Amino acid sequence: MMSPPVRSPARPGPAGRAGAALVIALLVVGVLSLLGAAFLSISATEVQIATNERQADQAFFVAEAGLTQAIRDLLYDLNFKQTGGATPSWIYNADPTRASSRTLNGPLRLEWDERSGRPIQRPAIALDLTQGGAAAPAPPQYLDPTQTRDGKLDWFAQPWVRLPYTGTAVGSPGQGTIGSYTVELLNEPGLPARIYVRATGWAAVGRARAVVRAELEAANLSSWNHAVYSGGPLNGGNPVSGNLAIRGSTYFRGPAALGSGTYVYNNYSDGTGSTAPDPLIVGKIPPLPAGSLEGVFRVRGDLSLSDSSSIGLSENAADDVKQTMQGLYVAGTTTAPAGAIHADRVGTWVPDVPPPSLLDYHARLDAREGTTRVRDAVGANEADRAMSLYRQDAGGALLNDATAGTLGIEKEVGCFRIGESTPSFTLGDPGSRLIYDRTAGQLTFEGGGPRGEGVLAFVDGCLKIRLPGTLQYSNRGTVVVNGDIRLEGEADGGALYASGDYPSPHSLGLIARDDITFEGYPGSQLLGAFFAGGQVRVRRPVKIGGAVVAVGDIRLEQAPDLYQVPALVASLPPGMPGGGARWILTAFSWREMHEQ
Image (cartoon, rainbow, N blue to C red; front, top):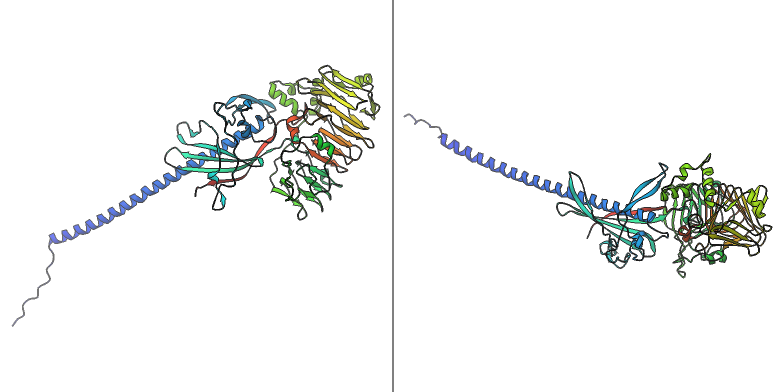
């Protein structure tokens, strides 16, 4: 028998195959749709993330713009709206008794431009906490150490004072606004020059917000805001011998080597150093508000200290007078024994502060009055031109060979000499004259001078002042000398000081075209503002209160005692170079703030 034929398995027909393909296609489309949806979601998320980041960046940049605006306005206020002192300007603007300080977007003002050598116009934009005087000013607020969080200062809870800025939108024509900002300020108790700035920026679109905070410190680098300013090194870079004592701030535009026995103090008290303060000088000058000079020691070069020298003193728990210096800044290297430096801050940034020129006073007058006297002055060099302008301003208060012969003023080795044999005299005209009373030992400036600021007297040649005893001066005046000035004191004498309070209402300025030499009897006391277009030389251990400023260097053959008078900056005698404000703001910290 034959077997039945074997049949092959049945194959699906065309309709079955089409159904399977449809299912597969649907599955693929579904998967692709899911992937596409996922990709779209991821893309949308990434776009949103990019948008958020862009808005966050915009808010951050806007906050930085607010911080920059505040720093710019603080600098303007400090340099052009204060009448002196070290209190930050925003506190002045919060004082309703100072109506003149409440100026916002004022008229253009003239300012002397060092680069072009001519006066130019600057916009007068300033901080104004009083909203133009329309509202009661907010009182100054201070950092509150009790506001803490997790053991740290809570910066968001501090009593910030908001500046009433208007027009704080940031953007550009055709691009629209990217955001706006607010700015707030805060002071630190006991440190009026310490300013905290908080700027908050918001993006124009979205809810992005950024907060940045900067800790700033204001410093007046006017040469007169120091006990001593040197346009060159101290003592030619050689170590200072003897017991040099400096009470207050210093600026040396070159290296300084402090020998054994040098002490730098931040007050007028005894402290624990080797040199006690001079009672005559300290008794004439204003007391310090908290016993501190807020002294800063700056050296634009290397600094070295020998054994037993000290910059600042360690704090004494039993004495509330501040002994440590506010700061020590040395551009070069510092070599010092262990424990010789006591300063709240130690750094290396020392801005280059060139010495004021002899033409500086008249350049500022040109800028203020819109005149061109500096440009039109005749002379072979800067010193000649400056002396010609001072000679004009002195008018009849001119000491030269002709007037000296009339007044009985003798010469010694080519220099006019005022001393024990000089008769009483009057130099100048009513309204602006210098009166010397030999019997009383009194120098009186009478009148307001050419601009009502005090008397200017001019000596056409070098001048020697020999002090057999005490010579007191009254009122405000400056003696400009077309040559050297030599200050001498005889045995048991040599005191030159104000007849009353210094520097207001009595102040004396001495300007030398060339050098000033202190050769007084050891311990001689001199109180005034001393400016040398050349060097300052100290050949005796004298005591000098006020400020010593030299375009050249300071040479110390013997070590003096130097006393800074912070009030001198606001009460300078007439005609002094470098009389304008010279404030800087230093940022010690900068950070973005994040709420917890």
